Length: 489
Image (cartoon, rainbow, N blue to C red; front, side):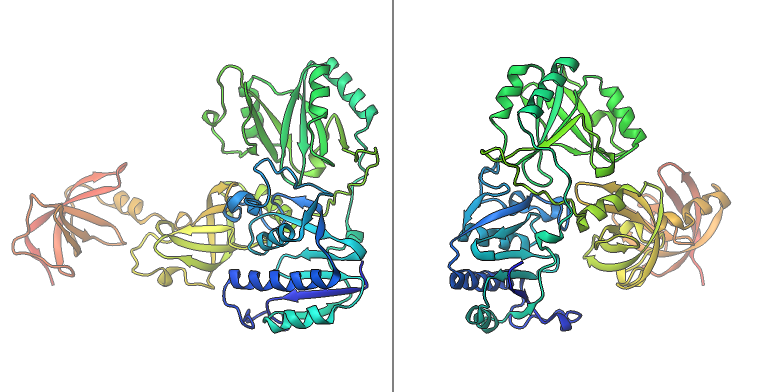
């Protein structure tokens, strides 16, 4: 760790509860200030290039597609195939600042940046940035404060490589490739997983020694490799394993010209989502470290044969959230606190036990059986609720909730206690071209069709007598007819 370490934040951490920025009131503004400040530290230290260390495509704060615009923030910095974005790659200062900007905006990627003489830049979870230098940088420190950022010297960075948990990785040397070639010959085929950066995958199906040699020359520097049993054309076997879900896994699907993008194998995934065309194959690859037992694994050394990559295995907040989501099932009942709303659509809920925020989403139709004019009437921000899980969306890291599902269905109760021919009293709620809607109790509404106009005319709020002329249980519709004397006291 460098002897001088600075923590830079958009506001004084002691005042973090208020979240009041010193000068900037938007993320882009804060990010621009960070770029200027970090540029000043690098300039004072004579830094023009930085090395990428332990890069991730996503999975630091989130795996969600919601936080991954522009290829997780890499768009415009690297080619689509991520050439040049790997452990140990040297990038110009401008590119390094672009990586910091993407991380601060929450675009998914993460990496450490390392320079000469102990210079480094680390970005944390809460838009806190740590800068290290061999000597104090008072001028850069003052410039950062002048543009409105909070700066303090600290003992060290929480992302210091010295604190990394690392696996005892095998070097992917000639002996590794000889063993891989032997596995291909023994089994007739192998699925080779290449992880050039954290949570980014490339897949290779190897069936001959020649293919093994060809792939070896195409791999990304310092990539992590794992050999798995070959893919299968028996999609029914794959679907059965998905439904059984003994562990969290990636679904890998191959077509004759390459591979589809892998995805989490969701237990609710239907058979139709699996590709069954001729020439297509599929495999399930475990995700959680404790479940991963490949046939062979290793890390590519540098061109001189020395293994320098030290891939950290520290669990991130995103890892913890993925494990939590994997513990949930459709139909589970959870508790949570209403966090924020989305006008006219629903509210986000912080689910108890979730290490992140806004995991649950409660749509307006699932809030209550009874009519309401404002969401604040039924689920105001800060309210603790119990809700049933209706669906789990891995790609968005979101759980669909229903409060209504835990409440008795007033419509079912009503039709169980009424029948065609019953005369009831209700309140006119809405007049539309199709007819008149009448609330006949317990929030249940029936329709008097326009072919039976009221006489005398009615208005919203009027109490009326009506007769049930049809009960449609499946369609959840009740047809009504006005009694000869519609109005009642």
